[in-house]
Amino acid sequence: MAYVRTVKTASGATAVQTTATLPGHLGEFFGRRRYLADWLTTARAAAVATRNLDNLHARAWALTNLGAALRSVRRFDEAVTAHQQAIEFHRATGDRHDEGMALTELGNALAGVRRFDEAVTAHQQAAALLRRTSDRRGVGIALTNLANVLFELRRFDEAITATAADVVICRELGDRNGEATAPATTLNDENIIVLGDLEETDPTAEAAQQQLAAHALAEIDHIITDLAEPV
Image (cartoon, rainbow, N blue to C red; front, side, top):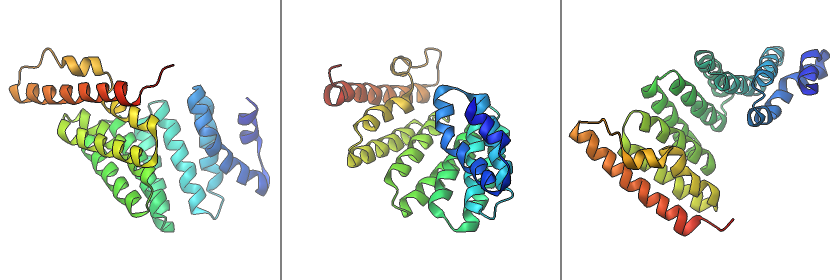
């Protein structure tokens, strides 16, 4: 692919800057098209190139992109390391907003290695920092990620609260797509959730499942009645 060749063959001061920044712009494209090997190749090249730049901000974002690329190929331990390094650089520059975004990326990587309690802390810290910097959409992203981890921990009440808070933000921002998809993103497969775990025998867990199922049904009705539009 031409983009990959451009990144791999770049040399000289100007080209190093290109190598450092271009993969960050291409990351979303590679991810959506599932060109995961290309994403990882260019992200690694960027992380190496930024070591020669006197720009901690660029180094941090190159590492964030590398962490995301590593997560896409399920190399979660390496992703955790990349995101931790990115956070250190953001803190060094005093950029609290980007530190918050990097923290929620770290939370996603920690969840990948099933370090759920640490992931919860990372997402909570991310949401707090993003609130302080008035990034409502960023707060919503952190809350959605937090809700997903809380769901894995079977802390259903807290997961519902985080999801509801994200829905409120989506409404405030006029993001009808986010408002409609946030509950589904957290609840994953509404049919399984409504049915519950048929092998569950713990009365407390069954009661929690029933509560979550009721919430899921209410959200599905809300999506259909209030948000859906004819196709």
